[in-house]
Image (cartoon, rainbow, N blue to C red; front, side, top):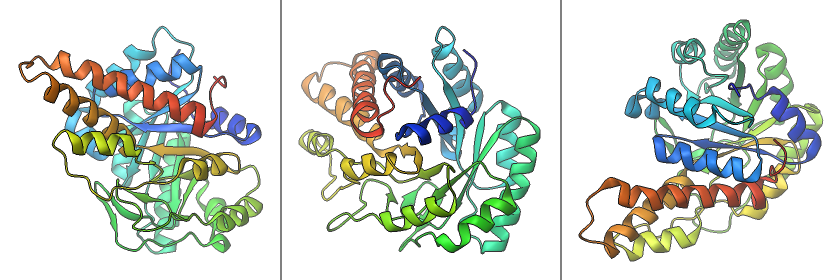
Length: 307
């Protein structure tokens, strides 16, 4: 099945009270792990590529790997640019065959965010590609995205923003944050803001970034086998499930993939010090990604059986 846009995915997710997982991919094993989990659970899925992943892996390689993984499947799969920071990057991804792009101009003043997002949407729509934009900024760090305190999305701005830009989905800030060190105390999400936004934008798909849960079993395994990730904490999964049952149609997961992958590699090498063949330690890493993504699909997103 060829790559699809997220339009139908989100329409079904909104009506069905679930969210579609958007998983960041960087290499063959991660792509295979995510797709295998989606096949096993019969779930739609979004594979997203960041600016850093494009630089690291070469976009031609990544796209061919994605195509190879889905060529014998009827699974709905979208290929999405995560955190595009310029019109030029978004245009390149549209031209490269992405079915969805994100323009993140949330760090700019409102009018500049509107103008850049509108420009990207006009180009993308002319080529059959959907667009995600962001209003409000997240705390934490994700590659080039950095903000110390974060800023909640102002619900009073969302209607004007969507109307003037023409974007197809909106990433909002309600208390999630990028990276594996999200909270020093109790995690809190502003569901009142989400409810207000959903009233103002009925049936419009909302996106949550910075939504990894940082499973403690992975953190403990990494630390047991030589790592140092003290204090890593993420968004509780019950909060994400609640958001998925509301207006949130897309939930981004990146750090949890990295944690599962790294924990498996560290454990294997520690227990098998004579191994030096990458296939020996990347095989359990791929399996760890698959099992983690399967858990997210079934227990957090609720998208299993929705392909």
